[in-house]
Picture 1 (cartoon, rainbow, N blue to C red):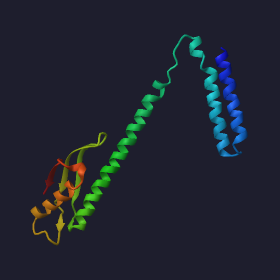
Picture 2 (picture 1 turned 180 degrees about the vertical axis):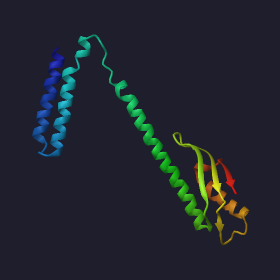
Picture 3 (picture 1 turned 135 degrees about the vertical axis):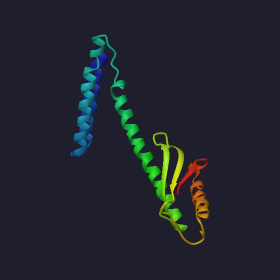
Picture 4 (picture 1 turned 180 degrees about the horizontal axis):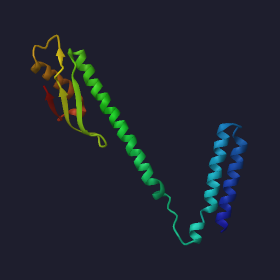
Amino acid sequence: MSEWLLSIAGIILLSVLCEFILPEGQINRYIRGIFAFITIFVIISPLPKLLNKEMDFSSFLSSYEIELQEDYLYEINMAKLNALQNDIVDELENRGIENIKITFIADVENMEIYEISVDLRDMAFSGNFTNKEKAKEEIEEVIYSISAFSGVNISYLE
């Protein structure tokens, strides 16, 4: 019981000290809110012991946090794949191959790329390319120059 009272006194003392140290404004309001939350938590913390129950907050937030993290990682990985697609298309356009579409067959959550599909149906090429086979060789050179794609199968839609 004395530990509990000391905890309450300590939190209140810290909040008063922070209020004196911090200037008036938005930050002070937020700090007061945080200390109010902590004070309430410290006050109710002995209740589970009185009721002979364990207080476990980890399971309360864990599933929500995991879901948010998975969504966030999915979005980041999709952005990476889109950036890689754009980089490949831009590099091929710089080399004289235009109007191709790159599609990744991948597990986005784990960032594993199984296959790269290249749509050549609307392809136009200029410069050194005399036929589609030379253009395919150039496409493979550009794709395989990216280390993430070494060993990935490339399929063509013609």
